[in-house]
Every structure is written in structure tokens, then in C-alpha cells.
Length: 168
Image 1: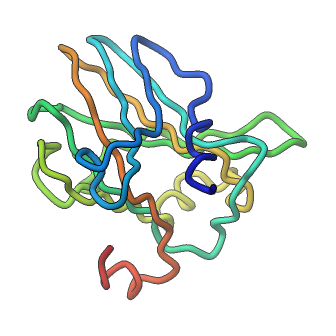
Image 2 (image 1 turned 90 degrees about the horizontal axis):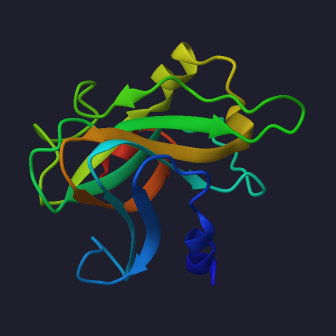
């Protein structure tokens, strides 16, 4: 039943993009579901989450997920976090490129799943105003020269650096 909640995950996307939790085990890294983001050329943005069901990530060391694309050669994919505070305007972190910042365990986004690790210590340092006890969205964005599809799977929080090193 929890997996069905992720189908309601897309909010306020921008650009020519569609995103959904896809029930297709051949495109998922593990299990049956993955997030499928299909984009056309130009800039795009997809917030994934829910402002009504925030997560407390205060004590965690990192967020990781696995990503692949149908067409190798993606230049960059950006990640942002947005809180769901109800007492002020939501705060969104600065965009972090997963390739440029070496969050991707590989040289670039390819047609094979690769792990992305976002160190939360760095995010906290660069965005101290973010309410880490009220994480509402992960925002995926980019700029494409042609149509492309991304699949994102196994989004996880890692409590410690040792937990992260143990792998997926």
C-alpha cells in the first residue's frame, strides 16, 4: 500500500515533462516500481514528494538513489530539496549538479543504473535555513537538447557514513 502513495508524488512540474511511479519491473532496478521522468528538449523540473507528508532527515548522513537514462549523453541532472514548513514560505536548496559535483558513481548518466549519493552535511552547510525536519520534495531538473527518459529507483536515507559504505 505504501508504494501506491508514490504515484501521487509529482507536484507542479515545469517544462515539457511527465513523471510517474511506473509499475514495470523491466525498468526498475529492484522490485516493480521506479520513477519514470520523460522530458522533451528544453528546461524541465519535477518536484517529487508531498507537502502533507514531510520527512525528518535531521540526523541522516546522505540521500542516495539509482539513475539511468534511455539515451546516454545526458549533460547534467540537478537535485534540490524543498521543505514543507507551514509557518513560512517553503525553502528550496540551491541546485546541485550530480555529475559536476561527483555525486554520481560514474563519469556520466548512462543506460545502466548508477548510484547517486548526496551528502547531507554539504547540503546543511550550504542551506542552513532549510527545515531538515520537514523535507517535502526532492526536485529533479535539467536542460535537454533532445527527448530523453530517466528512471530513478531505490531512493534511500543513510543514517551514518558506515551505512552508506555498506552499499544499497
